[in-house]
Structure formats: C-alpha cells, structure tokens
Length: 150
Length: 363
Image (cartoon, rainbow over all chains, first blue to last red; front, top):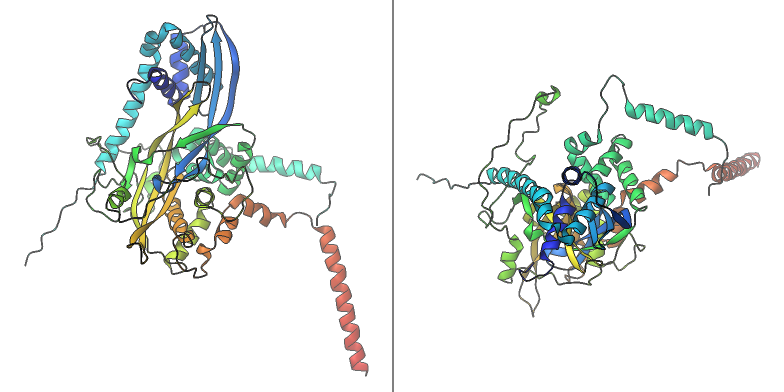
C-alpha cells in the first residue's frame, strides 16, 4: 500500500471491518448509530466463501489451500452513496453494519466513524496481537554454549 | 448392486431420535457449548477445518458437537455444508513471510534472524496425565510475557536461496487447478498435489510421510523451518476495483530442506518439500512436506523405487477420508439382491461338488 494510493483510507477501513470480531463490530456500530440511517439494500447480506491460496515453498506456484467463510452486503444511502461490506465469518448483521459504515464514511462522516468504531477496533486488534507476540517472545530460546573444562 | 428397499422409516426416525439422546449423554452433566469446543478443543477444530477445507472455527466446532467427536464425520458435515455456499472468488496467495508467528523453529540453523520461538507446544512436556485438569474451575497461571522485537522473521529457505544452495520454486499458473471444482485427473501438477495433501486425512498423510523416513522413498529431510501464526487474507473486490484484507487465518507451514540433486551441467542444490495447513496442525504440515517431496521424484530426476509415497495416484486417490469413508461404509448398506445371487451360486456349486464326490465314490 503506497502513500499515494487514493484508495488507501477506504482499503484500510474495509480491512479493519472485515477482520473485526463480529460482536465487537455490531456493538460499536449500534452504540454509535442506534437508529441505522435510511438506506436501500443493493445486495442483501450473503454468506459465501473465498478460496484461500498459498504458494509452493512460500514463494512458488500458487495452490488452493481451502476456503474460508465470508459475508458481504452492499447498501445505498439516501444521498446515493454506496457502501460495500465484507466480513470474515457468517454474521449477516455485521456485514450490513460494515456496508453502512463504509457508505457513511464515503459520505463525509469518516472522522466520526474513525473515532467511534475503527480506531477502537484497531486498538483492540493491536492489543490482542501484542499479547500473543509478547507470549511468543517469552518462549524464544536463548542459547548458551557449555564450555568444556579440560 | 443395491436396489431400493422400502420400509424401515419408523426404525430410522427412532434411531435418529436415540442418536440425539446419546449425543447429549447424561442430562446431569452440563451441555457443551460451541464456544467451549472452539476454545478448549481447538486442535480438533483445526483438524476439521483443514480436512473439511473450510476455515470457520465456529462451524467446525458445531460439526464436532453434532458428530459426537467423530472428526471424520465432522469433516464430512463441513464438506457438505461448503457445497451449499457460493464462492465469491479467490484470495491472493498468502504471504507467510509476513506471518505473526506464535511459533517458529528451525532444525537446521541454531541462530537465525527472528530466533527460535517455541510457542504453545506439547514438545518437552513429559506426557504424564495432569490430574489437576480433572479438577474444574482452576484458571491457569498467566503465561509470562517478554518484549517482542517486532523485527522480521524471514524464511530460512531464503538464506539458502540467496547463496543458490537450494532449488528455486518457480511460479506457476495464475489460476491453479482446483480439486473441488474438477475431478482428480492425472498427471497431477504440484499445486494440485499440495491441495490434495493439505485437505488429506492426517493419519494417512502421517503414515505416508513416516514410510519415507523408514526407507520407502527416502528423501533425507531436515525441517528447515516450522512456523505457526496468523496471516491476513487479501482479495480483490471487483466492485471496489482494489483489494482488501478479507480476514485472517492461522496457518502452520513446514519447509523441509532435502538432499541434493545435481547433474553434469548443474551443481548440486538442496531440494524442497512444502507443507501448509489451516490452523495449528504441526504433525500434518510436517507430514505434508515429506510426502510433497517424495512425490516430486520425477521432476527432480530421481529414481522411482516403487515406494507407495512416490506413487502419485496411490497417494492422491487414498488421501481423502470423506471419499474413503463413503466407499468403505457403503458396503454396510443393503446388498440383499447381490447377496441372494451369491447364495444361489454357492448352493449350486456345493451341490455340484457333492454330486461329483458321490459319483466318484460309487465308481
């Protein structure tokens, strides 16, 4: 992702929403927006899969590793702005929330949504990852060489 | 041949009702929740996701509950469910070099950038039953934490590749063949073999790998690296015109470094075996890498010693436990007409044989 990527902000937003735990996403969304904004559903929440690929030897030919569940949804606000939501897993309401958040952010409410939803989600994710990384670091082997006394 | 047999509906309904009761077990014992299975039987969940070819821990946990802990039955349930879902597309190949590693060890280099990280492993446990776990309600002590360097954890094979000491892994077709969309067909290229192995039965792939270690298609593997951790999954979204991270998966990756190949024109190089499996599935990933390497004998110009693990049709046709179970268990279904003809045949043969004996005795 380069700094000049015009889609960088939206891509980061949608990636955060896709990876967020569905319950947290829904809780933050309903706290921020108890009454969802008027919208038209362009694509009702739909559960499907994405084939995850890997590479032979991590760098070579790609191969099909297996699928993962994904739920997607698209909405249009009264203003005409369209939002697309994709979330990992099978939570339809989370996908709808992601689509609405995307649409509202495209509609100029990005800063408020960043503060209320995206920033907390990112912070929680960073904390989870830091917790695992710290536990992993504690299991790092510190080798020492035995000096043989002659 | 089996023919449709009518009747037995009530018996079947009652059998299923009893199954539901047996599944629940003693009502005096608390019922298992999906979340409990997902959190506390995570390695079973991982195995069902890997062999079911569907990454969804909650679904795998549900399947395990429904199957009463029969993991192959659970894999079957997941495979059946998967077929009901539309596929939105395929991801970019995951970048395992960027993995947030819970575990990362190398058997080939002691000191390596990123270090040896043991992670939550069974290794070095004494395999003594821990009766403390039988006493419920005890929270484990918090695991110690240390400052994470945050530095890169590069692949070990990358060091060897830099010196040209290991064979490169060339790129392949942008769209790899897909076992779940087309029938298994030979010759099977490496991407297809890797797909079959990663969803193959853990026991089968383990035994095949073990057979290579014991001399049936020996390929002298070192575990160059084993890593377990989380990677983002990136996919292009057509309606957006760019890619996003669509989720995250935990993977286990094993790269083996195997003995040389070389020729008059090319100096010797190490060769590679590769395993990549959903979830924390270490035994499976190592097994996959060994079998992958054994199946590469032809492209590496090695002799076929006639070992089972070198026989691509044997391995790929028998690795899938849902197919194997289906064919194996179908023989318990009614074969009444088949068997009637066998009965008639054996009665006739016996009658003929006895008549001949009597005739001989009379002469």
